[in-house]
Length: 351
Length: 256
Image (tube, rainbow over all chains, first blue to last red; front, side):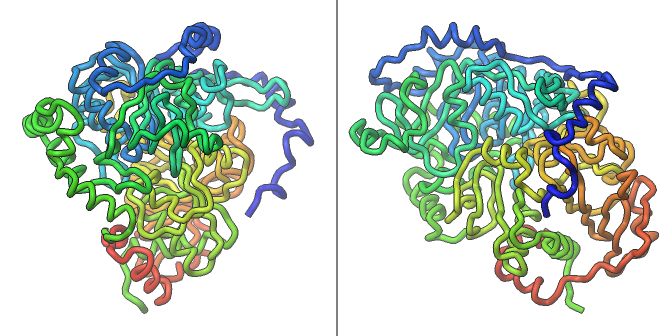
């Protein structure tokens, strides 16, 4: 099917323009709060001072979370829920007991589950939260949101992507054609506007410049020039939009190898503030072409969340009782488990 | 007649709606199964897309996540969330499937919350994800769901994704693109469309084993009826075989 024969296009007849103008249509605003400053000039002032030096940026998750993110900051996590997520950073934010953070709940599943268990954020931009897609809902994340402890502003996957894209472009907003007329709009912080060229009604979405973003990649050099394989979600824009960016990487590669394929550089070094070598860094999530998600362990997370006591035991064992991500991996089955997940990813073992 | 369960019926009926050469954005679960079945029966060139960026994969198994590596296995493209959503916004995506906790007579869907206080919901669901975007921007939206009077309600708590809003022309007047909107609601009991002018939900066909009374009794608002109510064609032996052997051999979806 196509819509070509159904309607005359806007440009041909200009009907919407006349309609909007004549009826003096009221332009609506969402009721909720924007958690970050969308001002493009304020962002430019920040980025003016951001280093462009080509210098090595190797660090540990412990250092990065201690020095690059402070209580009250607004942060975002790359990947898609449990796919290509920087798990070590999520754990470390919880382990260090960060408080009062703002969070971009953009396709947020296992990352949201971890961060909710630590109660590290108290305000959240929502596209997708508390669910783990086909796996069901996180009981604890749900309790946390239903408790009223978290201030909520509604958006959608496309909307948050476009808010991040607006920031990546150095703008203060992005117009789009979704969410109008719904409660998702009503409980967002979007505004309706009229196109200055056609008179068409659009939703305007404020640019989202996070204070801090963590993104997991397949490989990068010590300067933070990154390669990613597979679906990229919003990560390229996120790396540009965030004021401070940490990359966790499956492996370090030489800058020579980056220079051999410059067209493959997905995130360039000047976006990046720190690089952490983190093999199996998306575990228990999926890393395309490397290892599949550990569904058994994710089920263990979900089961542990049935009440506060079992969740506390679980968190003590896996997060608070471990000093870093390597210890977590070892607790979860170590290299044997990782090899098994690689065989599933490569379709050698059929699940 | 072949033996089948309600989920198998819904997937087979949904698959018939996807024609060869069309584009469809799907999530995990039943919609993905319907798209795969369609491809393996009458629409070999159906282009399946996933909102995290996968385009036209050769699916080796049911994805668990719309962003996992299965969604771009041997695909024509592994792109991004903005790429997929902008393709929808440009008018290049024909179909999408949505789910939700509540749906009203105009096809508005709630997947956000139950209760009246947004800041402190009685029951919280995941929220829109990409649902609102796809419902706003794809040409035709479909839903597959079990029918009961609590889910099909005129007292929807939260409009997460737009149907025809308040009916008539209100969807377009709200600013959403012309010619878009809900197309089919496929339940275990019946197949529904929408009246041309009012955009009120109307029954097009009734599934084997159910009556008009069953369909109305399991709906919380008054349904309209097409002039030529048909009997839904049950799944064919071929559809069932392909669904069971090739699409979902582990019964992840059809075993529910």
